[in-house]
Each structure stands twice: as C-alpha cells, then as structure tokens.
Length: 260
Image (cartoon, rainbow, N blue to C red):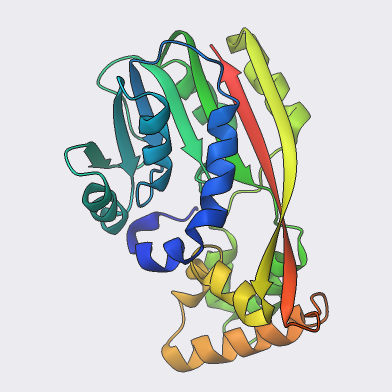
C-alpha cells in the first residue's frame, strides 16, 4: 500500500516552499542541457517545481500530473493556462514521448520501483531524461519517532496502514544496476540538507505537511493531539533547540538523473 495525495493540503505543504523547492532546483540543475520540447512534472504538487521547469525551458510544452485534485487546483491557480492533470503516476501514460520526466519528492510514495522506473524510461525520446529526487529519511530520528508513536496500543492496529504508505527506497547502487541496461548515462548522488526550524514545533509543522499526514488522517482530533504530544516528547530526545530556540533538521535526499 502507498499514500495517494488525494487529501494533501497545498497550504500546509507550501509553508516551507523555499526549503522544499531547493532540492527541486538542484535536481533540475543536474539535467543535461538538451533540446527539451515536451516535459512532464510527475507529482507536480502546487506547481512550484513546474514553475522551475518552465523557467528553464520557456519554449517547451510543460505539463503537470498529480494524484491530488487540491494540489492540481493550486497549480492551475499558480500557473494559469498551463496543462495539469489529476492522475496516479503508477497508472499514468503520456500522450506522446517526452524529453524530460521530472519527479521531485513523489516516488517515495510509490511501490515497485523495479517495474515503474523502466516503464517511465520507455516514455522518453532518445536522449531524454528521467529525473528523480526522493527523501531518504526513514531512519532519521523524526521518522523513527513516528513509528514509535504509531506502536501505541491505543491505535497500533490502525497505524499499521499508515506505516505501509511510504515505500522504503533502494540504495544508489541498486538504482544504478536497475537503470543501467536502459540508459546511456546515469548520475546518482545523495545530499543531506540541514533546515533551521523554530524548535520542535517547527519540525512538527514541517512533517504535518508530508510524512505525518497518513498517521494523523487515521485519528480523530483528540487522538491527533495525543499523537503529536507523544511525538514531541520523543523528538526532544534527539533535537535540542539552541539558545534562540532553533533546531537544525537533517534531511537526506537521493537524486537520480537517468539519460535514455
């Protein structure tokens, strides 16, 4: 099972727009210079990453795809006149061959990468690129704490569904071996960003827009408050605010730019 973004909140997600857009920019910057005439932003969210693609390739046809109708609505509001579609990436097919398939912070929600990634490569023109960025933080203290709280007997049975929403991603070597038979060039790297946030509240606020959503969606308001309070207590063991109340959130991400 994996998380579909049908109930995502664009407003909550965009509270950290600058921080969330930086990896998107870094990913796009690594795409080789080429004549991109048709690009697809897979998991486009509220359109912040789509906007980057349009800025880099102003003459190209750039479309966005997302499983969340709310996100697509926000993207259309941000980029009027552009083509956005509500669709599940694991079932989506393009109307024509693409020069760039760009997937920023979405593939971690999808299973069976050994099937999905080669299929997406098959939708590219020769010389086209599949560009992927995925959070690689399931073993960070923030996510270990989520699973610890989810194991509470009050809601453990329900939480097993939430634990399964996020796909554990592979290693750089495993993706290289997977993609090498289909590609003329593969660039893979891992970067850890360090985001300064306003204490434990800042960490909770960050993940309320992403990784905490499948857990909180299964609880009523009272249970949500209890869940977040226990989450805060566990976070305090790993993150100590400085004298100004700030903490640094380490956030590792895996990048892949595969040229067909």
